[in-house]
Image 1 (spheres, rainbow, N blue to C red):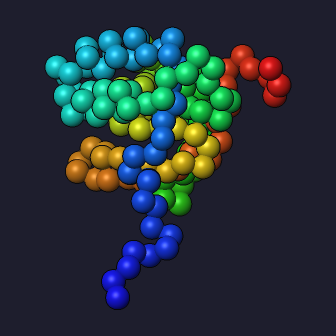
Image 2 (cartoon, rainbow, N blue to C red; image 1 turned 30 degrees about the vertical axis):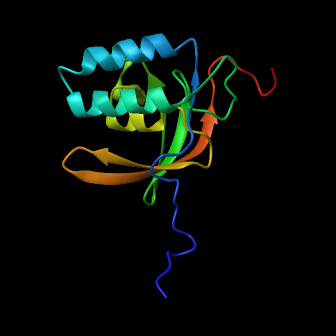
Amino acid sequence: MNTKAPDAPVSATRPRLIIDERLYPRLLALAESARARVPELANRLLEEIERADLRAEVPDDVVTLGSEVTFRHGDRAQTVRIVLPEDADIEQRRISVLTPVGAALLGMTVGQRIVWDMPNERTAVLEVVAVQQPNRGAHH
């Protein structure tokens, strides 16, 4: 009897995503404008934006623009802030939404994992460990 391992993350390749509906037009425009420079990444980002659940209110545990996100990639955990391309600064750990990691994490919720194509034909499994929103206290 050939069955999948019980811990095989069936939804890890395409977890449910949540995007702030106010950011939707900006994200679409960014992805469209990036098509000439990074067509594969831009198309994947467009795909992710299009399938996301658009919401007026985004829960605090969802990665959005400005979020500080701690994610695990293999045995390493890393914390970065997801920003617009013009605000990116790797020294400050601010990564653009138009990078493979930024695009992969956008819209994900704490505890979710995603399988994402990275440069050099590698595939990575990224898991969101924690999310902190800018200008939001512990309670609204």
